[in-house]
Image (cartoon, rainbow, N blue to C red; front, side, top):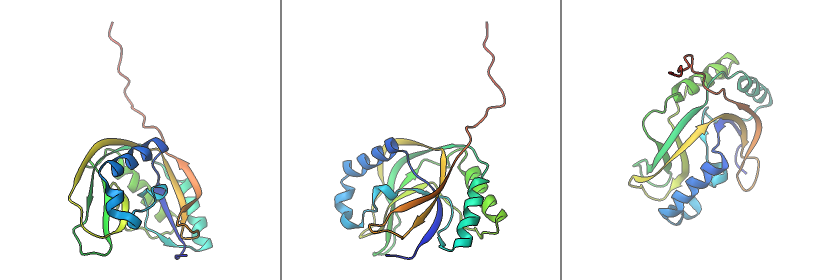
Length: 188
């Protein structure tokens, strides 16, 4: 087993995950990756850096998670691409179109809640979902059918304590539905 780590993430809902798996299959990326494919059950959007597991830290992360004040946001995944780095360890991921509205506010709210609990969080997060951390070759960008994913929940997960490698949810918190201050009046 690998080192146990804690991190805050968002996981795609089953229907979103199914659409993502369909795109990987349609483009035969699972065949190109083989054993380097990260298990779809683990696909996620990181919202914090991974932290080495410590009981006291786990409690602070749970408290931070319960105090995140942020709205849901929609991320539109529209391509799969890779870093152009040398093998091994090439990162393949679903990427989002532009900077999704609300995503910077979400990551800022997570960072603020962590810092308020004395947890060091300096890492920025771009909208993406990793499908391989150790692809054998770079991948030219593949356009996919757009997949709209509403990030509506944050989870604190424990990684590296099971075989096969899976994330175990320790806490979960719903995000607020955005409120629009001005309602459109119906014209007569």
